[in-house]
Length: 416
Image (cartoon, rainbow, N blue to C red; front, side, top):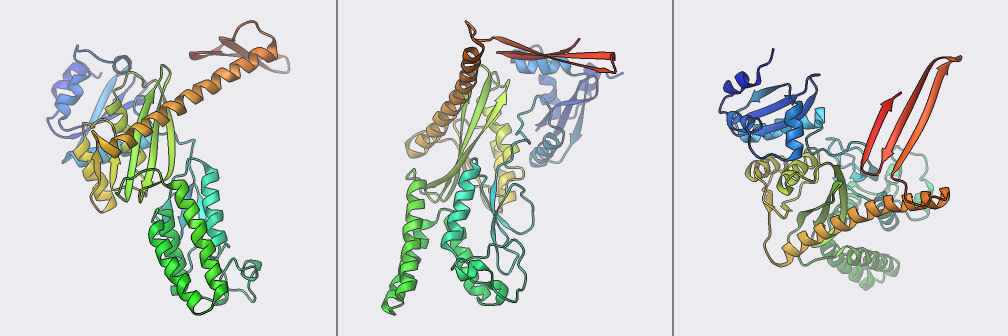
């Protein structure tokens, strides 16, 4: 029999990870601590707690813990256990919504550019994620229309080049018509484009265009001119701020009575190259800094695109440990900043405002669905409760019925 009071006395004052379980042995919460003794005891003291924590503590039947050498090890272990077990009281990223990335398979002698939803450690370079799949497709289409890279997924030797070569869309590496060095020059330019380094690309292309013009190679000069114009248009669409750093993620939060929205902007080379958002239920009584800490650890656990700087509104408690972990993963310094003024604060506020708009629009969409349902069914008022039934039997016997009830602020299911 597990005696919580007795087990609390045995907790060591060392760093580690604690795992809370319910009576069915399900993991309901995973946390880390600099001192397991101090941290775990806090949950069982008669102090002011949020409704969420009160509910979690009421479900704890027993707990276990793992001692590690330092806080950094505890953080990594915590992230991995949360990802594997997905406890109901932790801040979780949803696995059912995968965003597309743009992949460049750099291990290939003649790399291709593709869209993928799986990020693996295969030596490829990944860009994203793109919250809007159409944006990723539009960028890849743009790249394939302006650069003569291979478009086949598997590069094989051929007896004759494919149609893309004949229409000027490929340099036919399968036929040996282009050297690795010349082909790689295009790939390096594409990488700069996806990283937002368009000023550098445009400068080099203009020099190349002028040289082609001086040699009276007007066809090549015109092709370079068109590419410059297309890149400038993409650059203008992306430019949103005067922030000078090359790699920043900006995170904002908005809350309603029902859910929380976390919005993240990706800024590369003073340009916003994308954004995405996540929704969480039942976190309204959790502090913003706790949500931010949970989100950052979950989001960057397997993300290949860690920025050099993350900007948020409030400083998180385990900032130093998270910075050290991200820096080690990236291989260079990563900072988590809480700007107080100027352009950087404006950018955090922009992320928060967008999170608020995104949240309002989602809840507005739900209201509009109810309005439409009211009109279709000729109802006098908005439906507050919807019940559905399904009945099954085996040749008229062993009848079973299911009732599912949807309420405007709750979801209930019961077996009749």
